Image 1 (cartoon, one colour):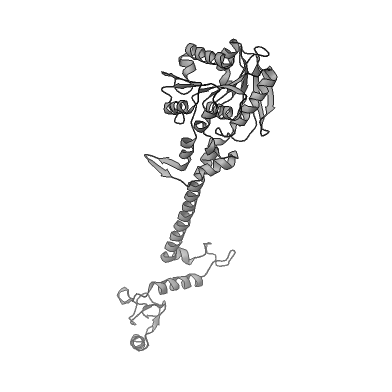
Image 2 (tube, one colour):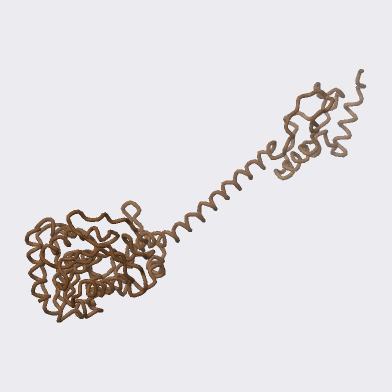
Length: 391
């Protein structure tokens, strides 16, 4: 059908007078020019005639078009293939960008919260790793006849031990192992002491071997086990002459036990520690490459809560003077590389101890290794000390 020539002019006049809106709403305005793509001949506006409107209005227009768009119903009679319903968030770049930003913010918030929790809980986790029990099943030593015995520590913790009988009535030596090991570690000492005629009791400290306890006391609770072992050894072997020989953690614990119990006639401390300050200070920092970053000071309180006592008060350096006049022998290797038992610590212990006392610094051997580096001299020194102390 032919379009009257006056119609475009009327449309143009109407557009100028009233600001007529095109078929796309108020997003664009037009000047009434004929558009060959329009069936009616009315203008839809050319590209150069379009007038931009604010982003908020454009967004609302896109939302409205998406809402009004026809959606295909399943089983419809139109015969057209099904398609997904239109969503303005997929059609609108503005909404899509906002969604991505919100998702990134949510992920970032979760990561920040997790990082804070890890930073706060790290010292607690390290404290648990430090004092958690390490139970094991010690193998029966070959070439040494032992009997298994169970007794209670002074606080009721069950303690397991081996008894190596040389002679009823002979002096007895209580042998105390190191950090997170077991009585099996003390078999080399038990052999040469047994061969020399001494009875021996090899105990598993709490939290180690087959003994009870959920934690290791870092020397704060182990003296209880040693005191109970001394009493058991005296009763079983029928002797009043009981000495204690300890290595590493057991050496410091032996000093603390002797300061508490006068029944301990003598002490041999191999590679002893002075305090746990260095060990506990490590709970307050974390190594990140070349840097040491501080963490919340929760490590020491966590250790104290897990162990049940204040471990900072376990200080052999302060207790060793109370052993006198009973004798003490300190043994240390010059090249001890354990950070908690430096050679300087042995010298400080010796200076703080009362008479009678002796210190042997082995030229080499590392931590608790003097018995292997100098076996003959080690045995001779220990046996000579015990012979004088227990006569």
